[in-house]
Image 1 (cartoon, rainbow, N blue to C red):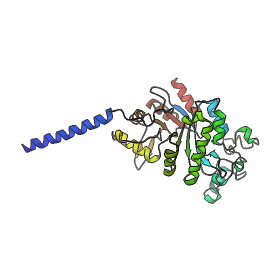
Image 2 (image 1 turned 135 degrees about the horizontal axis):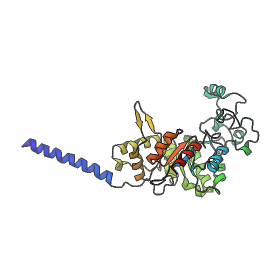
Image 3 (image 1 turned 180 degrees about the vertical axis):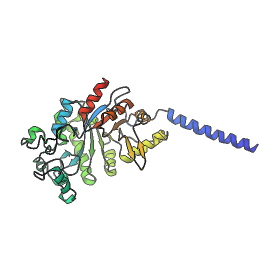
Image 4 (image 1 turned 120 degrees about the horizontal axis):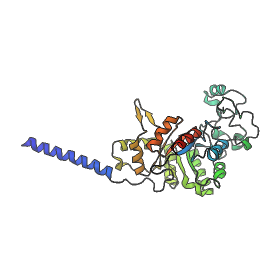
Amino acid sequence: MKKHKGLKIFGIIVAAIVVFFLVINIIPPKHNVENNPFVVGKGKLPMIAAHRGGGENNPENTMLAFREAVKTIQVDIIESDLYLTKDGYLVYNHDSYIDETCNVNGDISLEEVEALCENKENRHYIKDMTLAELEQYNFGYYFEDENGERIYKDVTDLEGAGLQIATVDKLFAEFYESHPDLLFIVEIKNDGELGYKACEILSETLNQYPGYRDQIVVGTFHDEIEEELKSKYSDLLRGAPTGTAAKFVVTQYLGVNIFDNSDFACLQIPTSYDLGIEIFLDNQGLIDRAHRRNIAVQYWTINDADEMRHLIELGCDCIMTDNPELLRSVLDEYK
């Protein structure tokens, strides 16, 4: 008798757990953000994000690259990283130093530059230089075309060629009238006080280009900058920091997404993480669950055509690539 009673109680507990998981996966979750221009909509092709402006097609993070990406390749999104100069300008660059993308060290090979930069004291850091100093250098100096030729090495009119370091205000001004629907993904790379100042300058610059204020998503790897963005610039859309993204992925895979209280707009992830074992994130279920919360799923950095096709067919919102020309040609196959 006791055995049957115990089995009955066990059955009730199991049934309650099953019902619980069914309910929390059926109830529509609250949207992270109500208006999200980075979500493409069911059945539509993903957006093209030119990573660093498209560094395989043109010199990365230059106005030349941005112009070609937007006007010729017709990308949807410009993606890059922001650093603060010594005199308070926000400029686009992937690293905190400029040695590997311009001729700040004179006429030496990239291999010699890389060897020089192994000693961090030899590097030329953006935070230690003014905008005027940075604008002296050719940021297309080491770019090689498909034949391995350094075609911009000897350019003298850097501003005219679009090969100076680019500022955030110059980029906004370039496209504000002609491409009002252009979207932006930026990451604030500075931490601490410099990071706080970078947030302030970005917000002030967007006030001059108000149409872009709702069309930019801001990310950071620094917890204190994330808190600054949430508390002082809550109207700006944010990307998920690494820890928040990991938490979101775990709750989705475990089916307990109702307990997720995140408020980011874009989940920017690679197709997999190596944590001793490889965790694959190119998953239809993950994308669907993100979409239930009106979160855009953006994969980086994808430079292989077959991998692009795979993500297109999964229904992601955006593919970040160094080669937007290639992605454009792949997307044209689907049209």
